[in-house]
Amino acid sequence: MSVLVYTESEQGKFKKTAFEVASYAKAVADQMGTTVTAITVNAGDTSELGKYGVDKVLSVTNSDLDKFNAKAYASVIVEAAKQESAKVVVLSSSADSKYLAPIVSIGLEAGYASNVVEAPSSTSPFTVKRTAFTNKAFNMTTIDTDTKIIGVSKNAFGLKESSGNASSEDFSPAISTSGVTVQSVDRATDKVTIADAEIVVSGGRGLKGPENWGMIEELAEVLGAATACSKPVSDLGWRPHSEHVGQTGKPVASNLYIAIGISGAIQHLAGINSSKVKVVINTDPEAPFFKAADYGIVGDAFEVVPTLIEKLKAFKAQNA
Amino acid sequence: MKILVCISHVPDTTSKINFTDGDTKFDTNGVQFVINPNDEFGLTRAMWFKEKQGAQVTVVNVGGPETEPTLRKALAIGADEAIRVNTQAQDGYQVAKEIANVVKEGGYDLVIAGRESIDYNGGMVPGMIAAITNSNFVTNCISLEVDGTNATAMREIDGGKETVTTSLPLVIGGQKGLVEESDLRIPNMRGIMMARKKPLSVVEATNAAVETNSVKFEKPAPKGAVTLVDPDNIDELINLLHNEAKAI
Image (tube, rainbow over all chains, first blue to last red; front, side):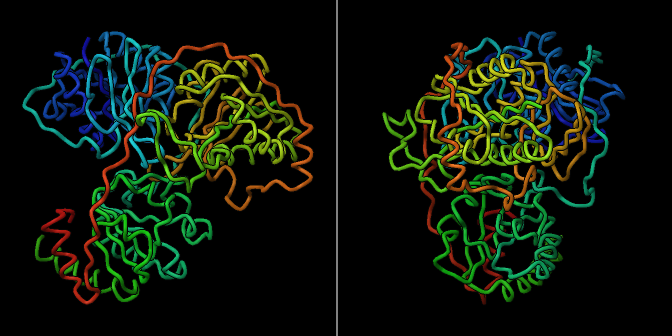
């Protein structure tokens, strides 16, 4: 009756969120007086999971699962949960995990709470705190089924190291056939994604035109950050939709969010609210973003950003 | 092709979020309700299938009579008929079960829902409908073409997109990209007049079980004031981000 956690990997390496969800699973297991089992798919070396509280790893190696498939992956997790008699299944908030979670939920007849930000406040009734109204509020929710599924918000719980070793065993479950076939994947491998980024640099209409994005990209490069934009910028076609962050775009939960020339409409702020530290650079001191930010500069981005890039380069050189 | 578009009735994106009854209920006072934006992208794509491929489009909502104006708006945009499942929506599972029941009864080929609602952000209804009805499923869907019973879709993934092929019956979790913002339609007077005459049927719920219960809401703690840095003193910003915020 262990806690089962799905630890995601990419090309044989664990994603950072894998260690966060493992840390979360360990906290739940401690509350329930049980152990943590991780399920991995084509993950390679799994020993690192022990550091985050995983006791046992069910390791699936199967070339049919090289490309992510929600239904097939969901069936792997369902089979693992059944074998382990898991009472709690912990997942991340990645696009893939959010895709498969509802399928696992139906498969296990288990209630599912997504966007969970803290360890359960109680295990009976099983109560979790999740974000709602696109980060404008929190919702305390009980999961009342025998088995529970928790989707953990990115960067909300953090990494918690504990001493331990994870034993590993091969696991070869029956895999559901899926009627969805991946034909091609188009992903820039040399760029930091908004989902994985520690730092996000975001530009708004204040930048006046797509030709001025050079300095946004340069600032992002200096910081090892992902680039993002406001909704008007993506609607105007200055930047691709995939960069649009906000209520109807992508959520951002980075450590640092730098908004340049973004006034801070309520829908934008909702989407970036989960970021820990927010910086705004805007000419208008009345821009709503100043009320949401931790640090602000009232100034012209075209003067401030180039200086910031130079100073950061010097800072990085010094602190390298 | 028979299309069912799931319509969530949600507070407008600019709404102030407050709670009543000891923070157990959303305060609807002064709040304007709209079609969930992620659903509206799907509805608009469904209009394209209607106009170009002769699809028949039904919209469905699980909710009380107060959601009917939102369904009428979907009819004014161009849906052929509406169904309201007469029960208060309590959790994603219950809503998915009720809609799955409508799907089975109506024999729909394609179900389009938003990837998530902007109020509860559960992100589970489309996937659960697919699992219950044993349909194919693509979420975070940013493009969709249907040819006979075959479909090609694009899904947004972390850091990019993927193209998939699949077939009907199919459930889609839609979002912006399925159509562009500029493709969204504001109902005109003719559409609004016609919507009044279109069928809106109320069906009784099957009283599906709930799996989760909302206990209480909380608003985030108020934020401290912003620390302003002089534009001529960028070193100070770097110092604060490094030593105080520990963010770089």
